[in-house]
Length: 361
Ligand SMILES: *Cc1c(COP(=O)(O)O)cnc(C)c1O
Image (cartoon, rainbow, N blue to C red; front, side, top):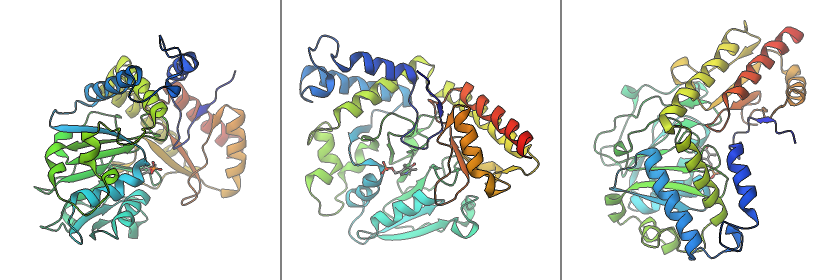
């Protein structure tokens, strides 16, 4: 068997120990006489899996008791729409800080429901920087302020939680949740699709201040109502049990590895190693994001000559380094280096990039 180092942005690489455990348990979940994927979500085995996943995530992220945790299907994009339905009155102003592709998506999802206001926007600068906090034009009567903690495509990451006063802060942490310690009490809600840093695609995590769930929001079906999901223990309908189970295994793995503080140290080293190769290449490689807001999770980069892109990808694959092609919106390359990417993988990529430059420079 030859597993490559996989730099995919999402669905993304998973810890090998987790995949092995899932394989070992696929035919029979210990003591159950069946696979966990074949059992009722209301049976004792899955109820235990679900309870442990929540408890482990609470430990991992130090989630305060006055925050609810939901495991939902629909991906991050669905949460982007549900935010408006649950927390804003029809047509109310909601502030959006747009620092890349996903911030734009978030805004687009709520346009039928709220008066979406671009309080800050990095688009004119090609999303290579985050507009300074002093330039944001926040609305006093906004239902909430939304931002994207890490822009997965543009490689732009907030290094601090922005101060927005009393208006609830809602953040898309899809591609950076659990990558470093975070003070959740600063947020009204954070959410993340699992397929970047938490597990397989098909389940999303919503962490929301309980008090916010009392807002009336807008007319909506119970299945679109976060309070109803909480009351139904994220089982209003059949939940994505296998994805939830796999995410639970990833949470246990992260705790065993030393938790988010340890991943923060590893992630800082991994990102520094890649940016060092890019910046030290004399222009052979380039990353155009302002240094202070470069993402630790997704490193987009360009070769000085586009004609080399295909060669780079072919030779990388031969060296056991896959999924480096950049998002079609930007072109070039992108290395996604989430928690499950070992430091050895980033070292291998850095070494390959150096050798590739020598051969083709
Ligand atoms: C991937 C991603 C999304 C979209 O997630 P889906 O689960 O496909 O809906 C949204 N925001 C960010 C920051 C992402 O990285």
